[in-house]
Length: 264
Image (tube, helix red, strand yellow):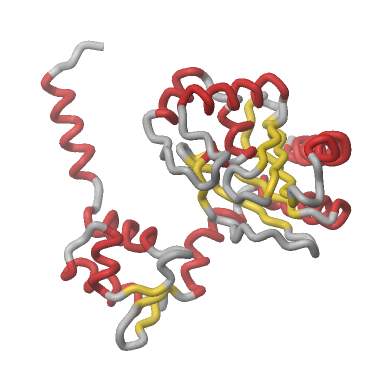
């Protein structure tokens, strides 16, 4: 497509339609997390890429609206922020259908079961059903992890078109979490290709040394595309790769099919 001067004008108009203060507020909210549960104004400004004055105004607004608490030194988010995400989550058919299936599977296998969706370059957890055998990976609904470090991420990346996959590799973080974390593009592409070919992905020790994950896609049967991944996480000491494929994979596939059937 040829570039025309009016296109430049359209881009400028599109940028002007954004509300900068709202964008800054979202950046500030995203700055809070497991590693930064409470921050001073200066720390929040640095984490969100804002000036101290802007961060102070936004933090005071969050406090006034009940979304933040101030102890005299640091700000922390309150449970009210859950309203912002849960309104979307509770409206998703996948959540309503998938959560009971995940809980039943977790109880039957006594393993942790999750449902996640792809938001390049990450996987976002939608459902997390815990078992009595807890794992050392602290995640829950809304948690984001790099897609290439998760069996859920790899199986979903394996369903993408080449152009979509190229978009992922323009953004993916090459951070090493364990000795097994793939940081070379060729290795990640090979893992993605294997997952796409096999229809499942088994990954061990990539995000956490002691944890293995097994995932299958959940498809929209009317369109045939993968909309999420269903995952079982287990301890490497407890479950060998052979046991995972022989015992867990059939259960995982049956549960994914039951979700797909309910979504029709």
